Length: 179
Image (cartoon, rainbow, N blue to C red; front, top):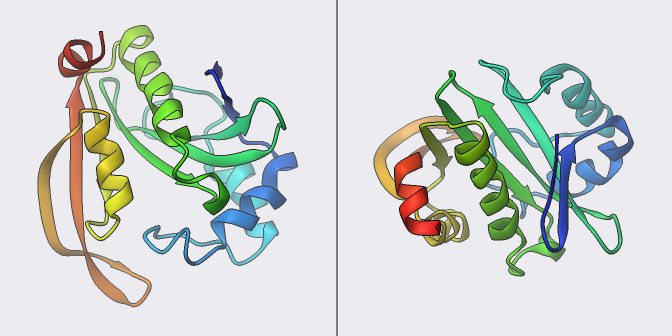
C-alpha cells in the first residue's frame, strides 16, 4: 500500500525505518499526548515486526504508514490506521517536530481519507485526541471532522488520568466537504 501526494509518499513502516521513527517518537515534547513512547530502537523494531498488520484493511488490526518527504526521502512522521470493523477506522498520527506546521499532516491525512472513503468505501472514520492537544484538534476540524464526545479522566497515561475527545466523520460528510 503506497499513497503519493504532492510532497509525500505514504508506505508501510519497515525495519529500515526503526531508528528514524525512534528519534521522533521518543521525543517527549512531540509525543506528550501519545500513550506509547518507545524507550529504545529495539522497542520500535518490535512494534514494526509484531504490532503492525502485515496487510492493509485487516479487521481488528493497526497498519502503520510512514510519511516520507519525496525530495529527501526523510521520514516526517507516521499515520496509524486501526481497522475497527469492515466499515469503521480510527486514525492516529505523529509528526516529527521539524516537520510540524507545514501542512504535511493535512496533506497526508486528506489523501489517506480519500482512499479510505472512495476506494475502500468505509462508512466512518474517528480519531481519539487528548483535548490539550490543540494542534491535533485544529487539524481534525480543518479536515471537516466534528467532535462527537468528551470523556473525562478516561485514560490513564504517563501517571495521570487524562480526558479523551472523539472526532469523527462519515463518508457522506467527506464527499460534501471535499468534492
